[in-house]
Image 1 (tube, rainbow, N blue to C red):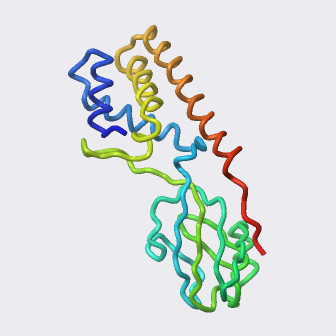
Image 2 (cartoon, rainbow, N blue to C red):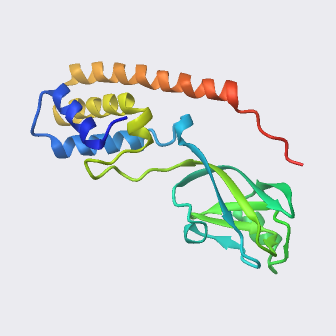
Image 3 (tube, rainbow, N blue to C red):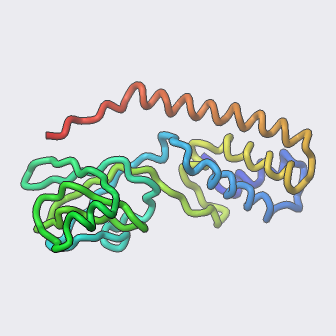
Length: 206
């Protein structure tokens, strides 16, 4: 695991430059944003929240879950039974329930960082969301996140390639950094695929 500062220092040493602090910070955060959609295992997590009777929509304020990038699966515990909540387009939710009928939740839509339910829950239930995370930019020198813990080699090589190409105009070193980036990317993809093969057998929902 590395801090934001440690990554900056290694890149500066690799470039043999001490005058690119701002550019290096920018390059690291650009690299993380570039790989945000890559399905790495470390981005996957889950969280729970409780519904409110007669409340149809739930924002980050309601759930206290602020880092959702993509929801993969959702379920609710209702009267000690587990129910899968199936994703539908927002138009389906809105057209299906114009009168806000209440009952057992069957479907959800994820729109503009808001969860919409059909049916509208009629009591307090515990909902679990399985999702991939989104990340805010690193800022303080002591900042860390999953990328600095599990993917520091990939992010550093991507950042170096960008700096060589866009800032230093050194295409020869940019090409070498890109080759290293590809190796690091494949290594992380291999690890992620291993998790898929070995540990992801979904539970049956009754």
